[in-house]
Image (cartoon, rainbow over all chains, first blue to last red; front, side, top):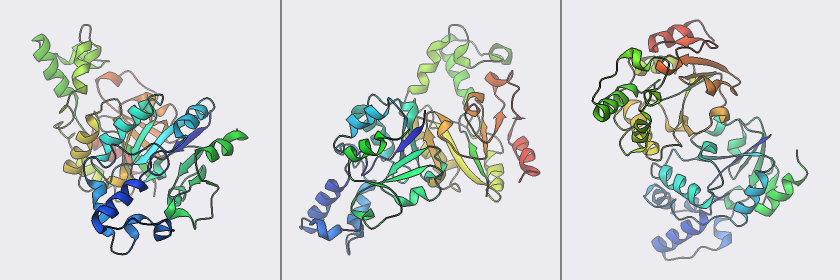
Length: 174
Length: 174
């Protein structure tokens, strides 16, 4: 059975709405799509401090699940080994929060298939679905870029815009 | 640079003394070496409940560092990429406790090189130092068995009894 490694933030879990809320709370402005096109919210000029909130308790606890993610992952698990491979090591509180989040929203995925790491070059899999193209640099398998604001100019990898696209991508794959 | 994946429990961290203490607390007997030869403490007849304590807060927080581990890992890092690859997903509290333990005792290892997982077949490395031979079953690199009571009858892999042995093992390796 081939293996798919699936990232969490901005792939399984929506992070952007929370960052937009934090930006609005801090600066009193609701950002529009064009404000963060091609970048992360905290890469907007003057918004660097927003990144610090990611390190606070609770940030990862209540992120919404990306639309169709549960359904499509459940389908893929009939034909693939699915591993959740998330960069969790930068933010101490994210460890337990991501663990609980997965157990709550994805009870059908065994904890044996959770991987919390830093540098993803350690991951061995056939496919990797991720929003960061740099994770594909040292990956032996096929990288699949999950669209989010910061990666829209990246064109080296097949791209999926949502979980329906993921379903289609794998429909004719082995 | 080649990569070494290093397990934590019973390789970097001594777990047995704590399990022996728990056994003594529960059953009033200090086990002797021959009592747990070839098995884990909680595999001794009637001792199954000892395993439950592993799931309690604090279990992983204060484990002693294995002798010479810091010194030898620091040396190996001059010639290898060292990743800490530990099965942490079964025990929720172990996540933060292992993270803090590593940051405290091994501040010279970057969090990018920490991997908390379940099934280690996801790990891509050239060498893996581990006390569980089953982790080598689907590993493409060279498994190196770190001796502990439960693995003494395993003879399919090169064996190291301590961190001085690890140093010797890698002394003439690329």
